[in-house]
Image (cartoon, rainbow, N blue to C red; front, side, top):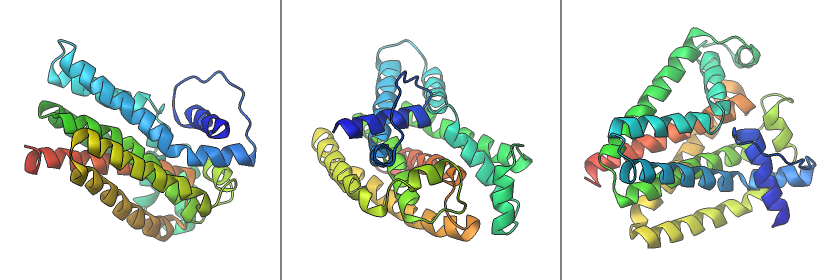
Length: 263
């Protein structure tokens, strides 16, 4: 448990803008625990989002527009833009329509191309729309599902990391990938089952929570196939893009549920 907690703090240092003034071991054991702690980082992130949403809507005089903007902003600031950087680089590479080797070269280029800029504008604009309209129609169950969004996106990141071959033998992805194998994902089903049970009992709606799990499983299968086809495997940028893409997909599902199911 102590090693898993240290792994969680390693994740905070690598994947968030939260200052963690600790000197943490970076050996294979603790990096493996960090991979196993990805979903814990996600649920921590989700609790922050859901709590902030509740506070802004129910305990402050802010308008729905202002509340949506602040929540949207915290989704960017929390990670320090590390996953957005992956989204931008992967977008530049994908929309170049080059072969795999050329796409990997484009992702290594520190310059940002037009496709990356356009892609991140579309991503952030869509996310803002989804958050704003969710807030307008927010329900108790909405808070539960908001917690699920980063929890599931970080779980997707971990599954992709350990089940897809690396596209290159360098970078942040390889650092974590070299420390663990797919067998170390055994904790993920424990997290997910526990989450479904707790949130389902608390909200009284197992069906919608389970729907989000199934959507994430389908997305994992899609992303595994496309990561190999488009880039020849996984890189840190591809993982970052996968996190952002999963987040957006799940925000969109929650947005649609407010129209067609929860309305």
